Image (cartoon, rainbow over all chains, first blue to last red; front, side, top):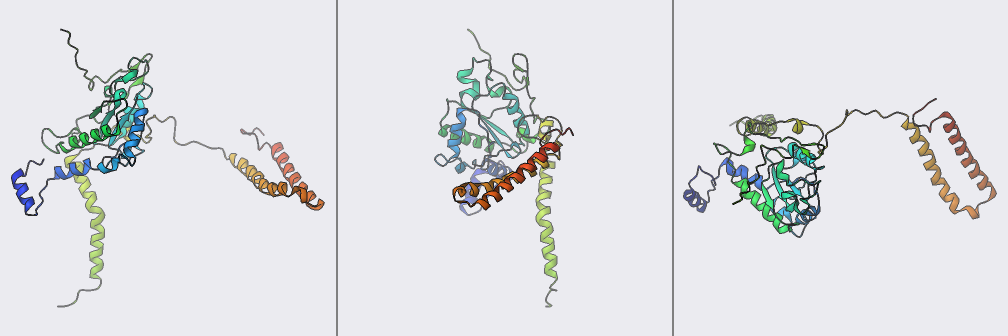
Length: 207
Length: 127
């Protein structure tokens, strides 16, 4: 929470009816309670995403019901489904066109790694090869509750982002990249097949 | 104490009217200057926003010839409105009404033949 105010003093003041906050806290509080997702679905996970937004699961409880059809107005990209290599450049371009601060939820096995289509010639093996992902949801497809959980995790992450100082959030730093290179269609694969600045797969250790 | 001039409230209202838009703008400017510097890029500044790169120019010419198509369509559209009651009441029509309707249809047919011979139905006009 806020660093300026002592937590004990804060609680004491609150008991007396005085509410103390900081700009950072106010900023993060308002941001995490009005996350507007970009309205696009790629495969079966999109159906679960739609169910999450509909009345039974009601994403509106978390302030995320306003699905925007334009990336200019969106804060969150829910990559819901199989990302084909044909679709990958469009997704990266849409991500680039979103205003800062922007977040990505990689929903389902396909968006994480290619899922059941990992061996396919035409499926991107994880959207995190080209855009930075904040929250991953496993599942094929994940249930709406899982998406809600991911949404809450994202809210927790936003809550912890710093406004100033050395560890401040990336979107506040003009020197950090805001756009990521859009892959091009090559002869056999996307070129480059992954963004080397972004994608660092874990090294497989054989003992 | 003297009552303030009735115009004094106008001054207050003018002040509020200025602060109301300028305050948020100033705050936004300060936020941009001190907290979140802009990070523009070619994709972010692009006009088109559906994920596909735009091809060609935004200015596309439509030939004014399409106008003729519309006019001819409109005439035959109206004709259809007349033809439906004609067809419904066809068996009970007197001879005079039938001939009047025939003349109407023939006039329209003549108009179509005329427009056709003028080349109005050719998309890229050759004549």
